[in-house]
Length: 284
Image 1 (tube, helix red, strand yellow):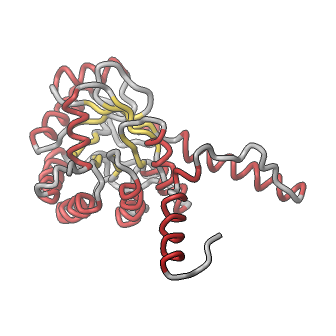
Image 2: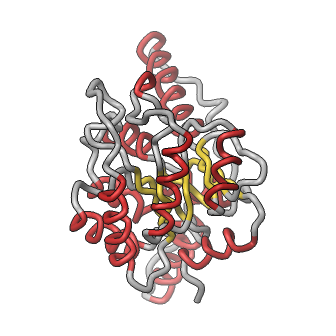
């Protein structure tokens, strides 16, 4: 049987750009699989905000991310990529959590080089390049022979003005990318890099390139998040206000196409009916 990690590796090897679509729960992962996406993506902010009502600035732990990621991975046949943030604070953390991700059925993770607390009011920096290399090496050891795809995320082009930790240097971004690939990463991702910068990095590093946000031509994969969980939360807010103000909720626009198939209703109905008949119990 082909493992989820091998399926993801095969997608990269095929060379055709693919989108890993927003999947912040088992049901939404089944939805993106059912409409034809070849991979799913669990973003850190999607998980921390939707499931724990917490910001994504380093206080949301990998234990909590793993809890959701393992549920999602178990519900689908397409590979799941998970945002592993900084993968903990030490090389021991990186080894431990990579091993746990590999055993959970997650196909790939991305690991970033920003110092915690990240994306916050703290004016931070990136990890020293050597420390990030050691963290990636520990992650490679932790995955063992599972094939877990490790995507190194470099935030050098994620500027402090936008709550990042990067300095904005293309020279440094390329230098780090080469170092991260040398440490065993399978691919690179650079948040907020322009299409021009992204293609320059790809040419300089000769690495598979993953992008966050809109697809960029000649890259390998896009991690597309935000639209799913934010739309769900926005709809919930509208319906909650409607119920509070009017005492009722309009359900006419709430039908989910193919819901029974998505939750395997027929499968479980059949199992229960078969048990009931064989034991002389009534069936509806």
